[in-house]
Length: 355
Image (tube, rainbow, N blue to C red):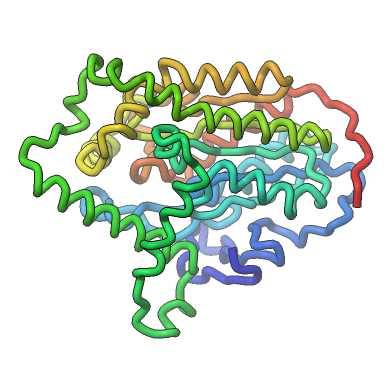
């Protein structure tokens, strides 16, 4: 994320007084300058993850199904800002600094690298990882690093109309949106070329069982990355909250969908590839979410499966704007899930840190 970038009119505001999204010197979003030396009586929390954690609005390809604005939620409306409000309201004796350090298209292992490079020297008390969607493909392939590198040819092929086109646009937002559109066109061509293509809505349990062994093997690398992440944070005494983010196509466990969300789900199904669809439909609930929970909780850290926590949310509450991005209300609900667990978590001594 480009330090100092002002998203201006791309900011999604709940109130006219909401501030622009402006990236700080680290490429983060917060409501104040982040001093390297943490103030006394302060709990510092960093939100990590991809575009949903960053506060992205709707993927533009979904505008025709039901339009929500694209852009980025202002700090008071994204998960970080709403978490800060939640914690400060319920525990006013402590100064909570909640920093949005997420980014478009970021993979889980890249969050670990960012922690090592930057966040670790800013005295974090908690790191909240909101992960899942960007890693579904690597849960199939088992190759998160090389999968990320394979995105580069698409980036190289992108042609900008003029220098001002980039100057007027948030680089990550533009590139990730262009990549999404590129993938949509590719998927549509694949569908048109194969009249026998099976709709993800028709995928059968037996088909999943036949492919499950491959998903188990592929997910080992994701679990290894999670173990490494826990170890890195615990070396600093930083608490981890790991959230498997809410994903609309994870149909076996979710909130009661509204009529709008049902339409968005059909759109997502139409674009889905078979293996990721099967992972979302079955594998996360059959096995992987429980494995992640056991790994995190056995290490004494906090695990939240957002889809499972959303069960019982009324259908009248609009949470999703597309396959994984959220409304301001959705951000608020996730912030409350996280805030409750942080307030209930036992305090522990923080070891001295290196320079």
